[in-house]
Length: 322
Image (cartoon, rainbow, N blue to C red; front, top):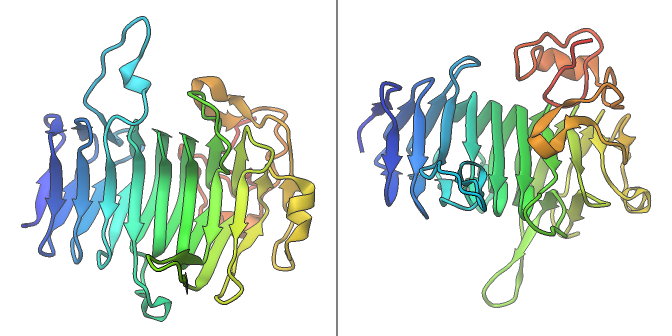
């Protein structure tokens, strides 16, 4: 319940839950390693904030506390070993940069408010240059909240990579959502957009999806369609996908009104060097190369590895060096 800095001089191992409360800020230094035991959570209470401030050369790493390997199982890459990072309603100014989050159940769960007209002016969470992978459930679950992301990679999640649920306000620029979940069969789409829920009495409660904008993003995976539009006609359902590379059924895509969407590529090609070993940099034959918008790239001029992308930008979080 006081402002606290976790330094990188030694590992931080969490048994049970860590709860940041009473308006405190938890700051995690670059290079800090955090290990969570089975079912442990990191909870950011209302009015409190998380600042995970890694750098390109010294990222913050958040993972499970089991790193041993056996002939049958490699725990260092096994999903579902800890709970989640939960940013509760009322928490604002959360910042995550150059942070690797892996091997949990849900990477980040962020809750907002019921009244979309009272969303804060600034994002509840800003996440940049970060990687979330091997989550047994969801990479990011955002509910009625406000989130901004750039140079974000979410890969290999057992249910969804990203759920924008019960409305909200969201911007994603130069992000890669690559769901090639290798541990079992996955029938669910990688990305879900939704603007309602059913309450305990079976009544539909509508919440405005004020904005869900994706610019220069990749949405890819093993399923035929990796994005689901789950819409109530009784609330706003505003979204844009501009200069994105999408894995989706053409008929499903055409069934939706995409007047506000520009220059997207529908592709079934493999776009990555080797997704089986978690290398999601672009293959030399990827249709994402040089296919991004220069205007969007001006907002995010460097890729996740610090490479300048202002000249003929690639789609996604990685810029390919020719």
